Length: 79
Image 1: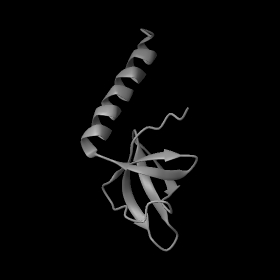
Image 2 (image 1 turned 180 degrees about the horizontal axis):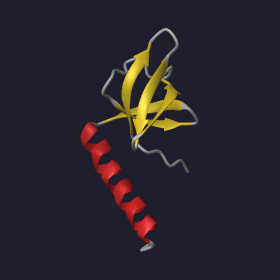
Image 3 (image 1 turned 45 degrees about the horizontal axis):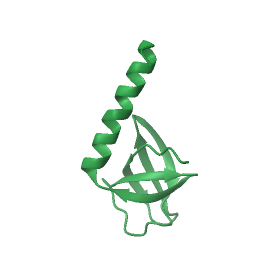
């Protein structure tokens, strides 16, 4: 099972197939070699350092909201 949090593409380095992405407020780099059609502003799911799938923005934002709610409840000790 894979647990992937949607990440927004902030910038692309086409010569290296590397993108800078934002994942819940943290930036990191990931390979976009498997998604040649990717562009800045897309939301992607990442597994093992590779962007594996471009997802719809509405789906990504819904998922991100749920993850934030889970984190808040965990921090409050209610789950």
